[in-house]
Amino acid sequence: MSTLLQDKPKSVACKKPVGKQTDEELLLTYRVTQDRTLFQELVGRYERELYSYLRRYLGNAELAEDAFQSAFLQVHLKCDLFEAGRRFKPWLYAIATNQAIDVQRKDRRHRAVSLDGLAGQAEMGRERPLMDFMVCQEAEPSTRAHEDERNEALQGAIDQLSEQMRTVVHLVYYQGLKYREAAEIMRIPVGTVKSRLHTAMARLSEFWKRHHPDLD
Image (tube, rainbow, N blue to C red; front, side, top):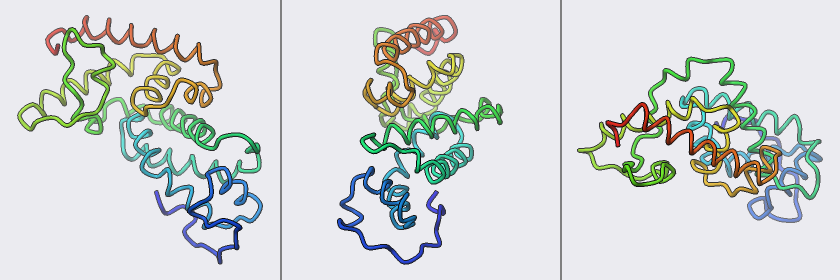
């Protein structure tokens, strides 16, 4: 991930230290100066967070890496389109989500990949909301195999959702973004985010009860 634009030229002097600039300041300065030090700072700030999101979204490390690289390539190519006053994070996530969708469409084999990236999530009880099961927690070694089975079954259920609903689930529950942030990323009203999320959770619950009653 950190191989992007590795051959850095001499850094251009900035009014503020690179580490103290906001994401927006870094990008706006980068598009004028093309100082790769600024770009690498942006990559470093989101490397773990964004890769984790893409890894969960795609269920495959290699595809997530491809989507990550493509996302920041698009950031580089489209930096002139970034509007002053806009927040960088939702803009980045919108780009990354679109890249993930493109990667997913090109390689449908992701559905057969082991979902070890979801291992260790909390056990889901019959009386607990499905969303509780989506909160990542550490599992005891003795229950790891059972949890792996649950996680794979849950991801299988999520894969049955429409692309729009699946994206909302990943952004809100897996990535922990607020409704307004998810709405900005997807360019839809907050009310639509809530509606899609409500429908998605209802369908996941129904799917789970119908196909995996033995895993409750």
